[in-house]
Image: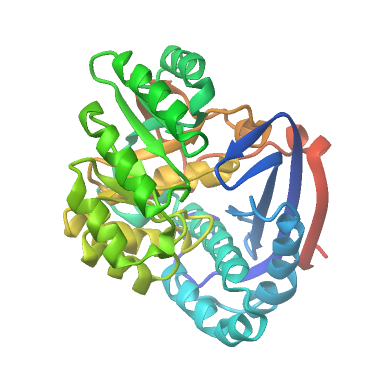
Length: 389
């Protein structure tokens, strides 16, 4: 039987978890903590026809979390899917979410299980699209776009003048800076940065839940005239609808969030409440392409903007681009511009940003695979279940 265009149910013979860590010369700082290395957990699936799918599991926090998530994948998820005919990705995602619900209650590890299922879902979608011989974006939506607009992310406000200039030279036209460190200094720097923008450029701010409600009100008022594209997570995600609603009424600056929401119910509630203008699920952290496609459709139907969050390696970034292209709308792809060999180690090389736009990787599935030779020096763990174990 042909390895592409197959219509029979796939049977997965092996599940692998590959963990990598890159030490950082310059740590990545946020308002809630500092990353001293860049971790990644990659998922590799192989079916009975020899086709391979790749995914990525979010593992930035806690610092020891990557290896734990790899073990969850191989010990708890793999036995549920190996060596049996499988339903389509969306149905399997629902099945795995339901099947692990009691384990989530028993362990209190809602996040790790959601992240592992998300990374598996990503790999399974890649495999399913490769079996059909189509790009992942087309497998998700037949009328998917072939390119998306991208923005430069991960920019600390103290380094923003230099990094924005470098990002502009690299092809970006949209930039997001991290704030929430020193209120007064942040305001001085973001005002200067906004004043330096060129025509057609947009600046966004991300507080990473740093502000109290009072400080968030002050920040939004003080930056109201800057024309920011959005202010992301100005307060804690669980601050409550009254707080978020007050902030949304206070300013015309759009509020953004979603990377720290999990579950269709939570996203539908946030979309329905109306305080978030920009919805930002992370496909490696919750939902995979299955969940994020559903959120994107709901967000766009409600007049919101779908802009996927992502801060990881190259496989999850490629998947995020495909989901965004399938979603439609005017959303932006987040690309962390800090040095990250885990992001760059994909073959063929991707992404290339030109005039703020990124063309999706070409070919079936994700259109790109990990460059394992480049990644090997950073490997900390490899686990497998199934015929390769």
